[in-house]
Image (cartoon, rainbow, N blue to C red):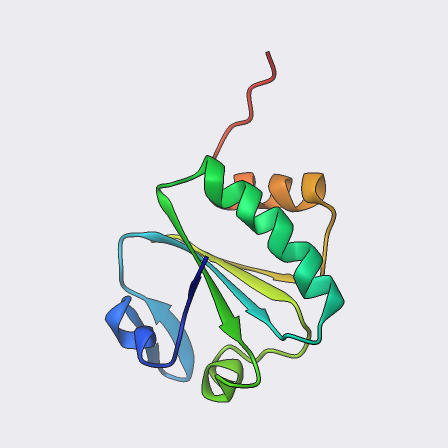
Length: 118
């Protein structure tokens, strides 16, 4: 999983208009705010890596919240971990750690993915 920095904000199609985050790109992103000392962040990382393996069409990034404090302020991060799911049309914020199945349900809904049980 790659790191996302303040420099990536505009390069990836993000902007701030009228004090709101606007995403003008056409890719799907998963941005997760984390910290080295955060145990729930480390557990979430394992879940995100599983999803990243299954969904190569979605770009996954981690943001070190304390190092990238400007991004933490822009996204109004209050809890760690915080994951933000971006599509062309929506933004979904997930605060805290969730077990894999619960997180995957939110993920699938945000990206309009349909799970098929065989």
